[in-house]
Image 1: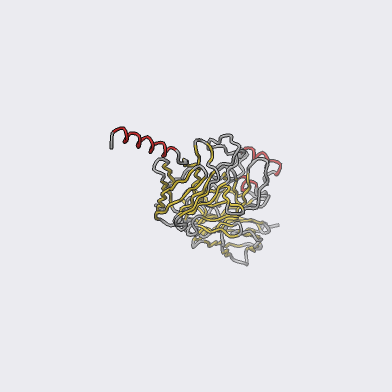
Image 2: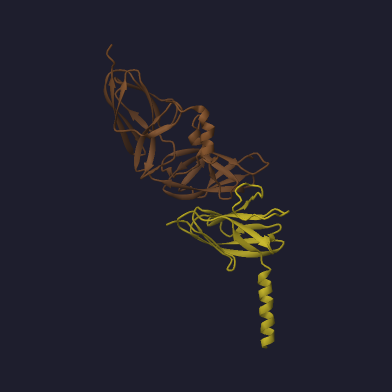
Length: 135
Length: 220
């Protein structure tokens, strides 16, 4: 493959990667627990029994028609979340938007690995979830 | 002196209008469910762990503007740490887990991380006429015949008073004091009936606490 073709493929891959929805943590873990989100690697580390709110965005707008499913609900359950722009606890940099935000609550079950598939009309993404036992 | 009721709204203001523990998404407030007379309890949140083996009735309100509180359900993210039944948290084992606050369709409106800890002491507190609880009682007290004293047993761990209602057993000499169960968990109203000495012993969570009472008679 010519260097020019390689460069073209690399640019195409970069563009394709940029078209995936982004995931951001809206909440933090309590002391001694873990709730980490890595948007680049698309993975989540979560302690057993701990909930974490994760927002799906696409080009800085809420993911449209987003749904999420877990490959193993015993390891991680995923529930839809409701975030109200007018709630007084405005600690998570809520921005004005005329469409509902796409928020999911990940709940750590038994320790292990599972995959959460997030689908939306903006694109799909797979999130590797590692649930850790509490210390 | 009983706590003046007219000061209670100012107490709420003094606590920064805190109405409970805010959920992780800032959309709900959770408090222990208290009688209206216990204003200190009503304005405080779940600001301590719940004692293992105890139960805590809770009250949750949604704080979104322009909306009253919808029908809610509560669920534990780890039933090994605590379970929830009929808006009562039952602490099962030391640890931490999230309490999910959901609506119909498992829509999560908020969640709160809740700690459970094992009590290492049981302390007795006096309940004043205004419903406030004093600091832990000394080892011995004196009463006059006809005096009344309301005691509540509270779980502690180190410097912290833990949350939760206890299933406590009270014992004392019935020749000296009467102990009335007024339906408040972990509490008894004690009425001194005759001069003498007795020890009020309270057992809960496998721990015992006691206060020695001397009942005196006023000679005419």
